[in-house]
Amino acid sequence: MCPRIGSAAALLFLSIPCFGDQIYSYKEPTRDGTGKVYMGREISQVVSQHAIRWLERPDREKEERPSLVMENLELDPDDVVADIGAGSGYFTFLMAPLVRDGKVLAVDIQPEMLKFIEGKKKLEKAPNVETILGTIEDVNLPDDSVDLVILVDAYHEFSHPREMAESIVEGLKPGGRLVFLEYRGEDPAVSIKPLHKMTVQQVQREMDVVGLEFVEVRDFLPIQHFIVFRKPVNPAP
Image (cartoon, rainbow, N blue to C red; front, side, top):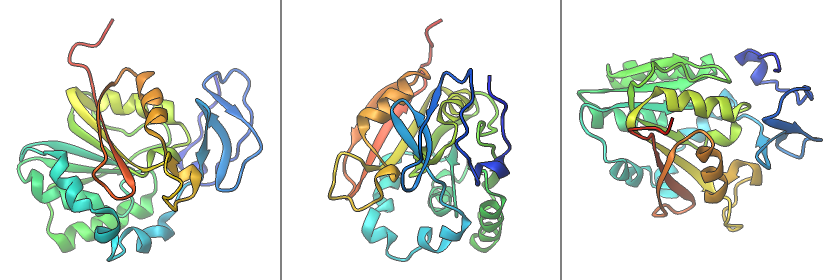
C-alpha cells in the first residue's frame, strides 16, 4: 500500500503515482484538479482558509438558501451532528441552536479554519460547538457516536475520499444519516467550476462501496443537491 501523507501535505498535494494503490489512478492534472482519479472522477484542488470571506458572504442565504437546509435536516434537540470540512463554520453555527441539548462537531484539516471557528464560538456564545482536527484520511470521530454527518460542498475536495467515507461510516451511529450538499454536476447552468460539482449518480456510486444505504434526493435548493444516505442498522456481514 502507499505511504500516508500528513494533513499539511494535503494542501500542497502532488499527484505522484504509487504502485500497489488499487483505489486511485493518476493522470495529468486538469485546471483546478489534482490529477488523482477516484471511480472516474478527478479530485479537485482544496479551497484554502483564504476563502473564509466567500464562505461567510452576506448573500449566501439568497444564493443557496441554507435556512431551507436547516428545515430539511430535521434535527432533534439532543442530536450529535458532525460538520465535515466545516471551513469557516457557517453551517456549524446554523445547526448549533437546533441541537441545544446535543452538540455540533466542526471537523476540518486546516487549523486556520478551526481557529476561526473557535473565535466565532466565543462571539456566538455557542458552548455546544466543538472543533476537531481531522486528517486527509480520517475525520477522527469516535465510533458509533454521531446522529448526522453533513458535507457541504466539501467531499469532492477530499484527497482520499474512500478512506474519508469509511471513517465517516465508522463515526455514524447505526441508522445515522449522511447528508451531502453538492453543486449539481448534471446542470451546466450552475456556474461553478466543473470539478467542484457532483452528480447524484457519482455520489451514489462512491457511497455504495462503503456500505451506506441511499435514502433520497431532495432538489429544493437553487443550485445544489440535498442527498441523504443512512448507515445500516444491521449491516451485511
